[in-house]
Length: 403
Image (cartoon, rainbow, N blue to C red; front, side, top):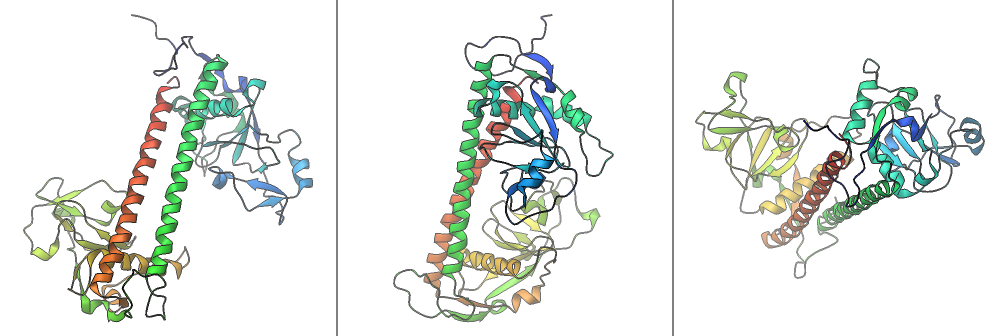
């Protein structure tokens, strides 16, 4: 049997040397942040913690005096890394610019020892070396899981065994690749954010304000005032069916659509019951989830039986489906804006049916619905691109570092 060599599955051309196993402390010095909550000031040195790790942006500051006093030997510099060591352990980011930066004890500062590491490419190499699956496992082993929240001691981070290339050229190649990939991800996120802002602005402009009869923005040729209607008079809200646990099967003729299936829950139940037509949702039906999470959806799957916590909405000839979907999205946005984050929103069928809504004629509805649907499809497409880039990054992390 041939001896197993410490080499990654994917390498750049002309690099053949075996990687070396060393302690993390050989490459990086590890420092703690401030252990006590500091006195914040209106301006001064930015102060970051776990919640800022993704972008290192903050609206909290400490004085320059406090910073110099508390960070005498552990001042961050361009090219250094900050890593979460409490809660969500092992998320890393690079400090990309010069200037003072203070950090809480929930973060550890990883300062490269070699002068050759003081550039962006080597910092990216070290960052993703620390975020590679092998090092993640090591961090997990040394984490205090009995603590709440979970944490890893600064000295335990230093003891972690890592497997690294000793060739600076290979390190820079890998770091450069990940730097480019991260720039692509940043640009893709910006594109998504801009599309979301565009959609939000259009929702506000294409629908009349509370006391107005016409919107700020209209398609050419439409001048009539929008009419006031009671929603329950122009749309019918149908309750789904409540199920006993014994009626929910692992296999069956029809999937049972629950609220979680719209969001993160891929687990499905099934039913063999033959029910009246009103309990089935087919492709293209307008649905509304009203429990836990709430909002409209246009169902795009095969025929399902929808659960009690979902309404199916049947529209009269006065309503266009795409327009109504957007109208209900705008209504959801208003509901969220009128509550604080700690307040649970409760919607009842009678409340929805009694809502007073403003609508234009069916031709204008169709124009508005089609435009916003196109933007939704663009957002969905760009979201898929973003997800695919993240999958590429995950695969490269698994294959460009030794497992």
